[in-house]
Image: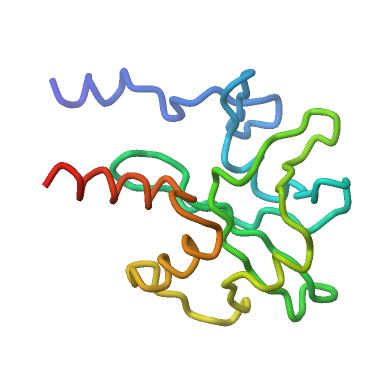
Length: 152
């Protein structure tokens, strides 16, 4: 019986495109994380600040807490990474990218790390520095932790 069940499960249960790659669907409200990574981030005047390097997602809730902005450097050398609370980003269809209400100077003053740095995301002091820089309730993480504290 186990063998017949295994044979009935298709080897690739995800839809694929003509090249056999897993298709990445998008709706008006949903986007695949691999399409977010690499997306340009703009300041309010439409100037490019950098691009999204990665997303930090709460394991239990599934909420995106931070978009890590890759900024600066030359030819991939000397880049810095700035965790931005997801709530700070707004998608702009006209620019096909995200807009933040921050200037380049404000971003440069934010908590950041170099590509080669090892960041301990379990360190609440590190996350507190990020959240306090961007203001109260800046990230989904901070909001969830504050809500849990209020219930205790």
